[in-house]
Image 1: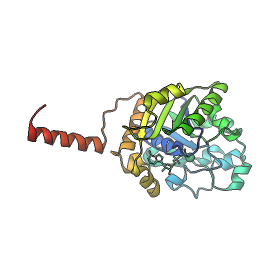
Image 2 (image 1 turned 90 degrees about the vertical axis):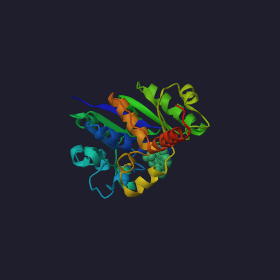
Image 3 (image 1 turned 60 degrees about the vertical axis):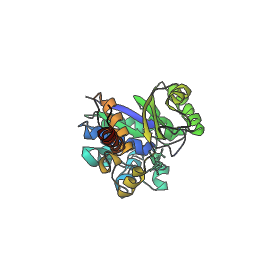
Length: 262
Ligand SMILES: Nc1ncnc2c1ncn2[C@@H]1O[C@H](COP(=O)(O)OP(=O)(O)O)[C@@H](O)[C@H]1O
Ligand SMILES: [Mg+2]
């Protein structure tokens, strides 16, 4: 059995790649899927930071510089998730050879269901390799034109590498009044919108506590979106609703019992 490799990419920085990689990975692990997340943003590593793994001695840096084996850089995350962090040092980044990622993929996919790669922003060499090793690429975009324009470049690069875009995660979307809505995004990028993740203050709070939002605030609107995405990737049914929707339906029920009606 070998895993399906998803690379989580964007174009523009700060769109939510790391947040998506970590929470989609954790949500897949919570579904019982053997999942590993890998921080290929070797210059601006922060996947490990979100889990309190920043003091790890052996990271992807050591693996890509040839001084450690990939199995030594795998750490335990929440819900059985496995994590390969990158290091924070500039020297570690300089010593890393991005090409080496291709060699270690074989060992990573062994026995797993899913490998999720957190890609760097931009289209430099360390960004090309994660796209080249993917089975499927997910673009994380924000509802603004700069994010779309940069995502289009990443899409073109992905296709030049003979890979394809599985779909788009529209992150930080204000669900009702998004400047660029779901259909527009899909039309602009020529790809399906897999999920819309709303702006949610719990994302930052969970980061501060170094716990993925899908574990710390499982009923929050962003968590529901990440869990729904995980279920759809795993081909499972998903019926949970967020606390916000629960509250709304409670108010509806209350209104019905007071005022009558259906
Ligand atoms: N849906 C969201 N709601 C609120 N804040 C978010 C959301 N998604 C991401 N963020 C915040 O935006 C910042 C950038 O997210 P991050 O995942 O690090 O992006 P990238 O990896 O693409 O650079 C972080 O501070 C993160 O907490
Ligand atoms: Mg990141």
